[in-house]
Length: 215
Ligand SMILES: [Fe+2]
Image 1 (tube, helix red, strand yellow):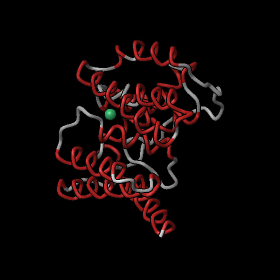
Image 2 (cartoon, protein in one colour):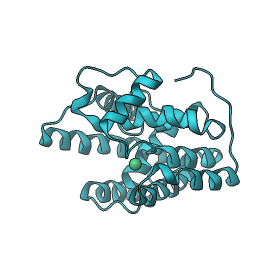
Image 3 (cartoon, helix red, strand yellow):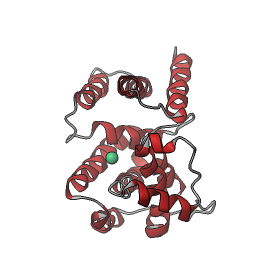
Image 4 (cartoon, protein in one colour):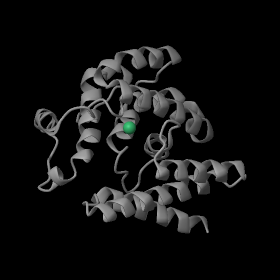
């Protein structure tokens, strides 16, 4: 990934144009999901980052642009963009698309992205230690958007909005929701006998530390 980014700020019209431009990168079903993530990112952005709504929506629109690509194509992108592939990455192929989407977004949508948007895309699947509110919003929007009907997604959505509706401190609500999401994800990976990405452990530790600082 380039170390130099344009310092793009986006307008409502930019986001509307981007919503059309990303369509060919997505299956029909994933396009519906993508629009729902953008809507959810806006909702969360109104609570946490009201001055970055357009940038959050852009990250949401771009977060899955390589999701339909198979492992061979993912590896092709890795080689092309210089993404380091770790020895056991092929055992958790789902983690590729976040890295490759971040690079492809930078290449194909250069005028729509900035560093924050790229990082929102990059970390939307695993999270990471020290993740920002922007990154957390994209991660969470992907998990709880309104078309998601998996039990854990519904649980997490109700958990978060339950806290907000109860007037819980919004920072604590986000921290607790992030911890709960990692607990659900890690629990599922254990049940499936799947690898747990180091960054997911790091993200959970990060939010546990943040939680202890609020007490
Ligand atoms: Fe997604």
